[in-house]
Length: 176
Figure 1 (cartoon, rainbow, N blue to C red):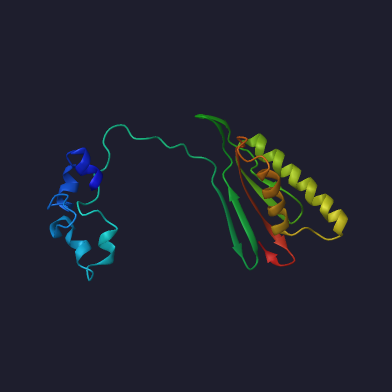
Figure 2 (cartoon, helix red, strand yellow):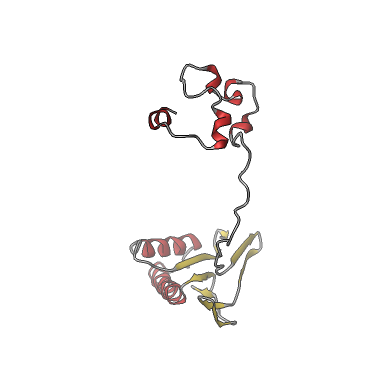
């Protein structure tokens, strides 16, 4: 309010209703009714007093849709579902891409993003999990495989990787 009074700029129409009394800081009218009344509805502060803005007119922003990957955890296991379409911009490159990749016999990874990035990192995690299984003589847990992938990829944060993946499966603690 003080900055607007210094700049002597005209307020937009919706703001004029809020500050009917002008910019005088000691003016009781400068404070909207909803703020002055402490017993007023608390949700009213979340919405602007002039209502919601109208829907934008003109050409809308076209959002590109990517891969849909779903995983459902139940007491009996994990169900994984992905779409099978591979696109390159607006061009549909393939209708039958395998986007669920095995990490080991009990753990799967889903693929979304750049196909090269996803398949490379999931193959690397599969190899590292196999090495860990050979060293420890027991299967790697789902949490360990997920953490391994996170730690490997984090080193390349900001490098422009196009990678979206989910690691899920079954271990000695059950589905995860």
